[in-house]
Amino acid sequence: MNSDSPRQHFDEQQAAGYDERWAPLAPLRDSLHLQMRLVLQGLPADARILCVGAGTGAELIALARAFPSWRFVAVDPSAPMLEVCKQNAARESITHRCEFHAGYAHELPANLKCDAATTILVSQFLTDRTARVGFFREIAQRLKPGGTLVTADLCLLSADQHDRLFPVWQRMMRLSGATQEAS
Image (cartoon, rainbow, N blue to C red):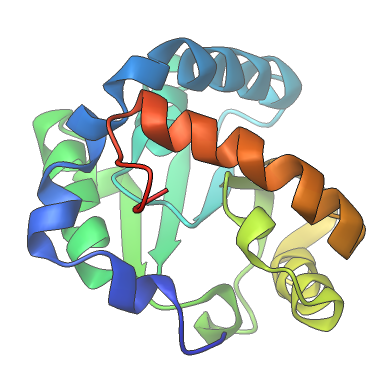
């Protein structure tokens, strides 16, 4: 990743307030979680799910509630965000079903094989095409044959699209309380 990575963006204070900050966007989050559950509901009862960019664990917890025997591998480049994820998993009494990795998907063991993977509101930050392709390739390499990837992002196919979609992201950020400068 580039030098402007999430490792630098989310310190302990930012990670601790992340869920509260994004609470105004709960309807969007809940819709994504519902769609994710519907897409993945046909997986085996003992499925293993890779959550890339797990953040504070919102999608992991939503899936764990819906599928009580699934196991999860949470990876996030921000150690403070992953610590909040661990705390949230402990509150839900699901840590025994989870593995936590501070880092990037390409740093996970190559022999890791999961039934499905999620990456929610992560890849829109990868504006370089090569980096974006590499990001998804690393995830695909950690899926079992026929595994499912659930991704939801502001799609970027060109720099022009980025320029058109970035104001939408800024409006979302402001709705969550970010100042004009921070968004």
